[in-house]
Length: 233
Image 1 (tube, rainbow, N blue to C red):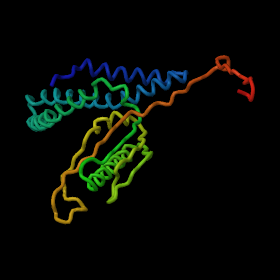
Image 2: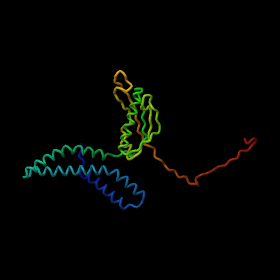
Image 3: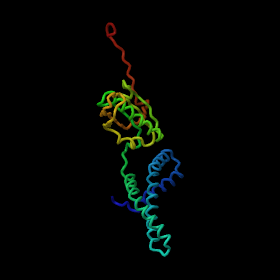
C-alpha cells in the first residue's frame, strides 16, 4: 500500500481548519449549511489524519532515543517502536479508505427492502433476523427506521418487508448490504435436526429527495369550455 504523504495529510487538516474559521464568520444561511455539511464530512477524516501524523512523529522520536545513553529510555523506545510499527499499517489503510472519492448518494437516506428467497418458512425467518439486525444497527447509529410495508411469514419473520431508514450517511454505510444473503443452520421448524440452506435478498436504494416546485400564477392557464348542440352534446 502506498504511503500517504505528510503534505496530503496537512492539506486535509488545513482545509478543516479553514472551514471551521469560515463557519464562525459566515452570515448567509446557504453558506452556513454548506460549510456545516463539509465540516461534518471532514471531521472523521481529520481525526484519523491527526492520529496518523502523531503516530509517525512518535515513531521518529522513539527511533532517535534508541541510540541514546539512557538504557532505560532506549528499552522503552524500542517497545514503543514495536507498537507503532504494528499500528501504522492499519492507520494508513483506514486513512486511504477515508480519502477515497465519496459516492454522491452516500449522505442519502435509504429505502430498505428484504424478501425471503429459497427456503420456505426458514427463509422468511431469516429475512426477519436480517431486518432485526439492521434495525439494531440503525438504533446504534442513531438512525430512524419506519416500516412502510410488511408481509409476515407463516412461521415468523417476513416474506417481504420495506422500510425507510433516515439519518446521517445511511446509504454510505448500508449500500454494500445489497444482494443475496444465505444462511446454513438447523431451522426452528426442523424436527429432524437437519441443516437447511435459506436465502433472502436485500435491496438498498437511495431515498428520492423531496423536490419543491414553484409554479407562478402567471404560468397557469385555465380554459373554460361550454358544450353546445342538442342535449348538450
